[in-house]
Image (cartoon, rainbow, N blue to C red; front, side, top):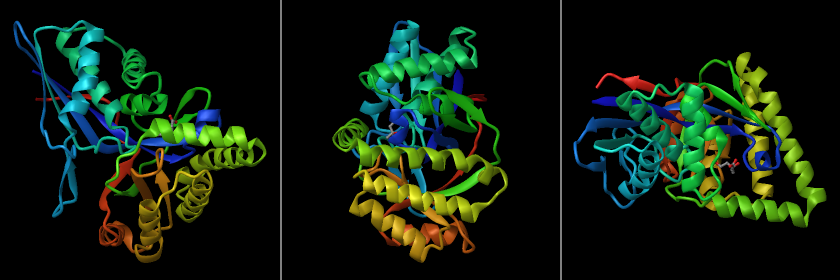
Length: 317
Ligand code: MEV
């Protein structure tokens, strides 16, 4: 039996503007997807640990989110099996990462599966090859879309700056609190909506993209020097700019304001494509627990996530 795991991700700054080439910054988080591969002569079997229609469940006592939905995970795993020509295997997927929430769930499933099969079949793929192959597979399943940031973070972990290419950044871990609206979102249509807005109002939306890119570029030194108050301020500005682009929602705003006003956050913003999905908040003096309480009172699901975590790894089964 071979088991590999890969992390999900948070986009800290730069979503949407990055589609037009400005910088974005993201980090791997300590929620992971695991792929377990075993020999199964004569068959190809894919299993996931939860078939619930909502695709995940939450243990309210611990704030622990478990499991990706079967149909969703299966699409990605079958694409990996096909690409690698794998036969006679049983692949089991477990995931802590809610799907379609902007936390890189599909990329971590793909990267963990590629890595587990790499070990099982003795393919000797390098990390770079795992990242490139996983990006290709994600893109194919998502019909031409797919973010290079997600597969890079799932593979290498840590932090990535994305602009025209990916660049690994060496930065210390950063604790975030994630609030989930419980609304899945459709990244494709949100990206299209923002790009159409840019076509209609290039003179207005262009400068917003530039400002978002400038925020992303400022962030790394602030994380390095632990200037968290300034970092929080940038999160608030970035959120306002994303709202100006039309990707906010009442549900996201409720969580963002609960984090800032009740949870003592130093800053809060939506993360990922927007609409529904998740927001993130930087804990202030009151700590992460105050934020978790505030977000849950505002009817969000909430959990703490450490940014800058380790990338794909083989696990001892
Ligand atoms: C979605 O997770 C992030 C977006 O910037 C889209 C992308 O970069 O592919 C909205």
